[in-house]
Structure formats: structure tokens, C-alpha cells
Length: 338
Image 1 (cartoon, helix red, strand yellow):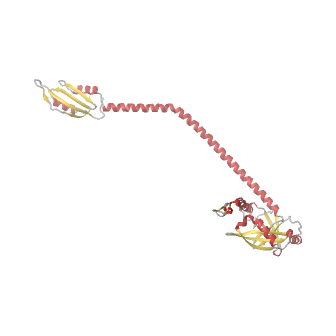
Image 2 (spheres, one colour; image 1 turned 45 degrees about the vertical axis):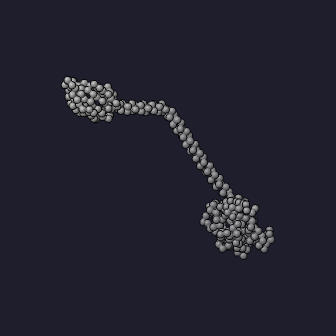
Image 3 (cartoon, helix red, strand yellow; image 1 turned 180 degrees about the horizontal axis):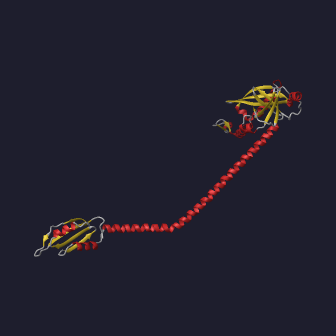
């Protein structure tokens, strides 16, 4: 059974903090010093120091000019540096955690304490953070003495720790951050505008395709209606062909006996008579008399439309006459019909 405190955990993550994690991820993407967005949109800063001037953009040396902001690099003897190793789970609350850390470790009065921090490394489940603490009054005295400036908002204040630039909060960095925020807003609006235009283009294209589809469907419907009589006639013709085919098949299997009688009348010579004629399909039964029955059988055998001529009974002489009686079974060839 799960404890009450575990009901919101999924794979070790507290789901109640999901919104804060999501916001922190977007904040790092847009506002962190190593953000790819900030490297392109952040303003160029002229960093003034006792060793000379240099141009920076998003915390890194830049060759771009002109610059829109100025920063002053504090000497090491004016800053207190703490190297902190914090659990990764506090990254969402890093600003608040480091504010408490600066307040707890500052040797200066609360209203005289200024600080800044830089995330150096994400080391597995831990964060390596550099915390820089200064005395605001000491910083202002240094600015007045070294650069003849008395307005804390007139410039940004930086400190260098192991080659990394740390921005001290509460001085003139707000001007640059406001400009960066405006650039982000313009870029966001431009992206939204491009997205809207793209959606409109796709919508218009989809609408045009939809109109073409409706036109094609209408044309197809009209064509189908116009082709309906032709289709019906084609169906009727196919049915008629089936009927004709069936009739031809019947004719082929059952030839016309009148045609066969007429054919036999031509083939049989004078003096030959037929006493009996019957026909069943392609089989003809023929009985008759002739002067030479064998010659009659031979002549019918030579007829190409007959495939077979057989004599089921022997030829016999008719008494008191010169005639012979014959009985023949004739088979018609396939495809031969009257």
C-alpha cells in the first residue's frame, strides 16, 4: 500500500512539481547564459576593466559591434567567492536557494549585500555553482573612484571566477534584459505570424483541393448518371449474348433434322429409299433399301460432316427383288449442324 506522500510520484518525480519543472526548462532555454537563443538575441556588452575593454555577448567574448550596454569588471579583492555543490533537485528553486545562501554567508549588512551566481557544471545528481558576494557600498566607492560614476543603474557589474563571467544582480543589468525580452517577444510574434501564414496557406490549399475534389465528385456523379443507360444497354446486350450462346449450344447439341433429311436426299441416289429415319442429338438412325447398300454406306462414310457410319445389322437381300436392306447408325461431327 502506498503512503500518502507517494501518491503523486511517478518514476521518482513529484508530479505536483511538473509545472515548475516545465517553466524552469523554458526559462533555461530562453534566459540561461548558455542558451542558444540568448547567444543570438542578447545585446553586446562592453566590459570595462583595469586591464582594458572587451566585447561580450551572452557571457562570451564577441567581435560584434556596436555595443548597447556597458559593464564594469570588479577586481578580485572586492568580491567573496563560494563554490557550492547542490543537489540537482533544487535547480527549480535555484534563485531562492542562492539568495538564502548569500544572505546566510554575507559578512555585510542585508541592505548592503549584493550577489550573483553562475551554474558551472551539472554533475549527475548535483550542481556546481559559483556564488559571488559583494558589499554594495564598497562597489559604489570603487566605481566613483575608478570610473567617476555614482549611479548603480548606469552599468552592469561583473566578476570573473576561473575564466567565467558572473553577473552581479541589482545593478544596471535590467536595461539589457528588458531589451532581450522585447527581442524575444518580437521573435515570438514573428514565429507566430509565420505559423499563422503557413496555416492559412495550408488551409487555402486544403480548401482548393477540397473544391477540386467536390468538382471531380460532381463530374463523376454526372458521368455515372449519363453512363447509366449505356451500362443498362451493355447489360442487356450481355444478357442477349448469353441467350444467343445458350441457343447456339442447344442447336449445336441438337441439330436440325430437316437439314439432315435434305442432306440425305441429295446424297442418296435414285433407287435408294428410306423406310425409317430417327434422330437424337447427333445420332441418326437410318433404315432403307438400295440396289447396292454397301455403296450407299461407303458414300455416307465419305461425307465429311459425318464422323462415323456404322452398320449395326448385316445387309440382307430383299426376297423377290433386286434390292438390299440396310440399317445405319450415323454420328455427326462436332460443330456440324443445320
